[in-house]
Image (cartoon, rainbow, N blue to C red; front, side, top):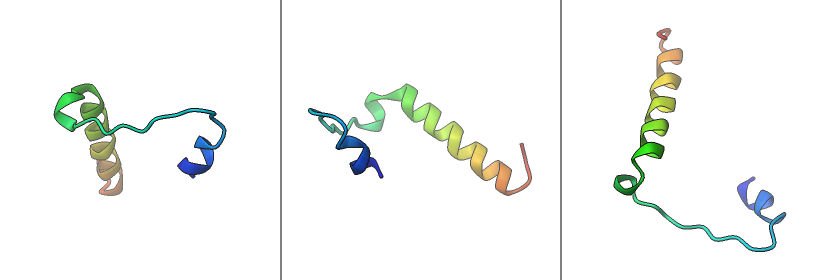
Amino acid sequence: QAKALLEGFRDFRIEHIPREKNHEADKLANLAIDSHFAKKSGGA
């Protein structure tokens, strides 16, 4: 699905950013994961 979306762009670059260099994205990803598992187990 991501590759199909990229076809709509003329130019693009995919670059890996290590977790330790992107604290805000890592924090948001962890919140999403925690929320997902809390909902599955009947919590928050």
